Image 1 (tube, rainbow over the protein chains, first blue to last red):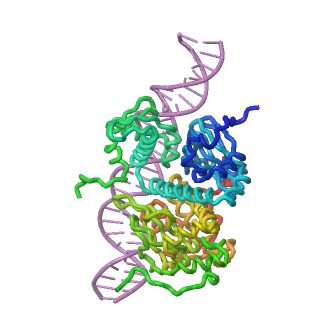
Image 2 (cartoon, chains in turn blue, orange, red, yellow):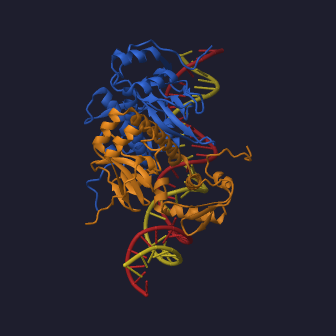
Length: 248
Length: 248
DNA sequence: CGTTACGTTGACTCCCGTCAAGATCCGTGG
DNA sequence: CCACGGATCTTGACGGGAGTCAACGTAACG
């Protein structure tokens, strides 16, 4: 038999790399012990589906490592990414029977899963978890609203440069490099995923990438190895910054 | 002195029309009494600003009647609506000092306000409120994600017909009319608000409305009085439905 | 009746999507 | 090791949908 996922080794919560950022970050030791009872790990390879829209939701859980996407589609096949789930992000919704978007691994991803029913019981009995979940959900809502501004009002170039700046910044944060100087990073997603994130076609994504390269705003080595020689110059293209030197 | 808002008569929570849907819906009598201590009403006329992005958030609260919008903007003035707040919806975010979008009344709106600090204390001490707030926030996130699909992937015509169907349905729900037959309703927002909702220009909105009128999909009496002779026909234009009769 | 805000319509432009052809990368197997 | 095939990415030609700019209509209101 070939499962679409595999189980991974058990890590004690105390040693977990997302211990202080995930839904469990405000739990005390007793609460962690309870969670440890109902948790298990799963990993999915890049490209593998994790859940399908309409499926029964058997578990909820946190992204421990890697990346997954949430996406919604129209009946004719158009797809829009609606969530990019990175380490510490929480997937699934308590008190909801079915999944309401497709969840897909875009990199090899490890999830810390909780069976839904016991988790719901814990949310009800453990205010800490509910409070943290509220905080995280409000943050996600904020992100979603910025994303709406991007989808509704930004040009293709602004969308692309915004995404590049976002990923570059996150990579820099992760590696503790300073943003001031030359910034090389790897794009964690395909052109198609970028297009679905930004509400564009892959052709437009590709053309914009080429244009940015030709203008020297980015350097490409292969399609995913990107260097940003001048972050300010990139940021100036996102539409988010006031243009200081602008005439009028 | 002319304030941008006025205070409204006090209504006991027990008599409130959003008693069973708002953030307080799961509160018991004691908890309601506590809320009643810190609540006050405010009304704003159509078009009036309620909060500005960046302002200190002095209060949070529920929409009791009327409608307000949340919107984000780019420095050059482009605007995207990111929330449409209707009766029972909750405005503001506990544990956040500043407002992060503009809040504007689009109809005469009455808010049931709670001073932020005491409300935060209640959220911390009253699990009921936090749980309800979590539920409502998750619902909003769902709405935001559908909205992202609309903004990123739908055509102008699909956007418009979706919005018309949405408002028509909500009006029908409110008046308990059956959706089967001819459905007249009033658009609660200007062409500009529609454009900001949909990520379009007012000209495109106007043109699409005219086109729909000429095709007999809607009837217009004035710019806001709309009748839908055949709901199925409107829905078929939204892109959300599988087209049963479609060849291939 | 003038003023002002709001909505409609037209002419034109251009950005981005569509369709199609190549190019590049990569894993698999002969 | 190289050939093959498929997936992914790039590039080009082209067209159309939606934006821009401008003029005009219409409704609301003092």
